[in-house]
Amino acid sequence: MLPLISSAYFHDFLESLGNGVLLCNVKGEVYAANRAASEILGLPGPAACIGRVPGELFENLSNLPDFLQFFDSMAAAGLPGRSFRATLSRDGQEALHLALSISRLIDSGKLFGLMIAITDISDVVSLHEREKRMLRKYAELSLEKHDSLRHFADAVAHQLRNPLMAIGGFAGIMLRKRSGDDPDLPRLTAIVESAGRLEEIVDAVAGYNALSLGGLAQTPVASALAQAVFSLSQKRPDLTQAADIREDVAAADLPLDQSLFATALEEILQNALEANPTGAIHVTGRPLEDRYLLSVADDGPGVDQAIMPFVFDFFFTTKARGVGMGLPRAQKIAREHEGALTLASTPNHGTTATFTLPLLPVRPAPLT
Image (cartoon, rainbow, N blue to C red; front, side):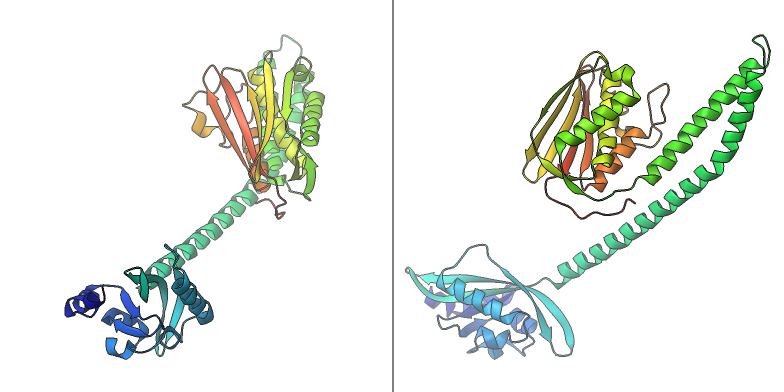
């Protein structure tokens, strides 16, 4: 190995490499280098590297002490696949981002030196920084757009509410004064029903925008589930009186706004009971690493795969009397808990809605 390293062939080989290469003896002194290394280090040529140690060659390297410790540890016991990243400042020139790797040179089972490979990753780092800036800008624009749409929806809902109440109210008064054989009766009935339908939509939009994440507290999953079942039983006794809700929920305390999360869970339970009013609803909960999976499954007809991509869209519903804001509302509540809500369904085999929630406390944030 030693004769090969000292040969002209080997030096020509070093010069052909695109990355910088420094060969050091066991004392850490450089005895061979290529032009790429000297250019990266801002030196006039490979000869300027010879006889110098890493502490001199990399004196302008950020966190130099850490690199020298890395160099010494690799000299003592090489760890394959390890690399060191740092920034190299150069007089009058733009700083370089470098990836430095160190390999032990062994001949006949004996360490005779170290090779430092220097890769200039400035372009890659610059590209990543540009991508990060673009993503941040995109997130800011998306947030602004979302906030603008939310305010617009609030304004529209507010402007529609009073005229709708007037239309529905006056039509209702006129309807009550008409006899059963009045020819205008069907028209007035249609006006009252349509006004009521529009009021439901306005209320749903206003309710979605008004969702607010309160203080988070470590809450037993069973407590949130019990609140959701009780609330649903008060609102829809027609669904819950004969309901067969089977619970298999592992005990766990989650960081929740209990009332808000119970609202989302209530929506999912209601959908399951409406899909399968006479069958069993299975509620299961299990921790998985740092998350908790809470699922509500029914044995109903399932969701047509053709409409699955749209189930979380605003105002999308297959119900004869429905606004189509329940699932978007539940999904928003899950996201504000730093979690997610997913839906899986197989035709004729039921649907499963799954909340994936953090087990550890999360930073409370306002809904957007």
